[in-house]
Image 1 (cartoon, helix red, strand yellow):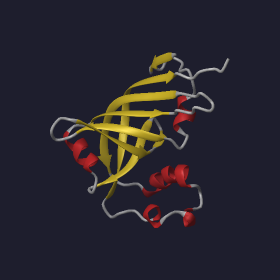
Image 2 (cartoon, helix red, strand yellow):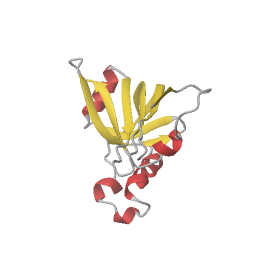
Image 3 (cartoon, rainbow, N blue to C red):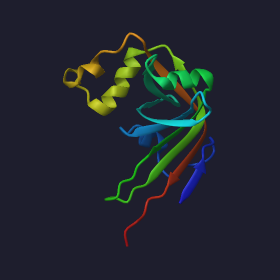
Image 4 (cartoon, rainbow, N blue to C red):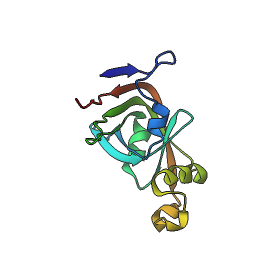
Length: 150
């Protein structure tokens, strides 16, 4: 098992950028108004050292982040056929920022493919109140818990 906190000098047990380029689901933990942790799954884009996902005034997560920007994120795999168990665990700060349609489309193409005409209308047209969350990791732990078959 490799447990590697992220620093510029340390190597990770796998290519984190390539891993985060895969169409995986991130689980994002924030704190609600009562001070309790809440977790939401999100599609994300890893770009220029930030995680990005779409939100809006409709989402409770935006309200949580206005109150407390501290956020934790986990992106992992559990591939039982290949025995691949990879984890990227991050803590940092997230903020709601103005919407960027081009960035949002780059994110959605990872999950839905390049042909936008085949996307469900909910993904082709963005809500008027759409915003982005920009998560800045302050600490990253990278683990490879994969197993090799005898």
